Image (cartoon, rainbow, N blue to C red; front, side, top):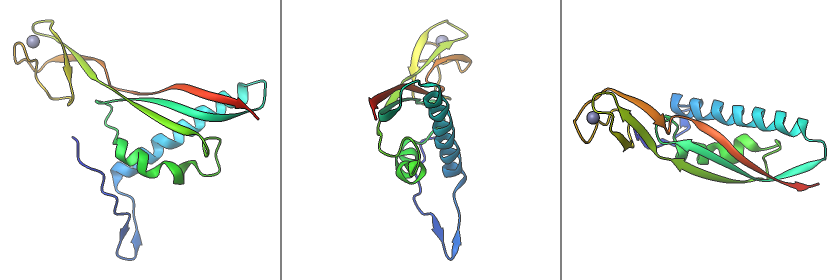
Length: 137
Ligand SMILES: [Zn+2]
């Protein structure tokens, strides 16, 4: 699961993006879309000073790729100058067999109490924009 980011974008003379990077790129685009619609709803003109993101450990998102692509993806957007703060959210699951709640870093980790593999994930599966810090512009 924790395959490290392959930052090799150039393959010979072909330009290609590994699928995992495509995934992160589309995530960045949805962040921009959400932030843009939030900002359009704002009454006063404001600039974004910072954005706080919660990224779950089980969300299947490579934070390294997010970091790597950030400045290029944000260029010319409302988030261009914003400081990004990424919080990793620990994965949590509830064991179906013994009802034990436990912390996990990979989706396939078994229950530490009974070794069971059936679980309900209760935290760490998603990405959220936790906060936008605005300054008057
Ligand atoms: Zn269990």
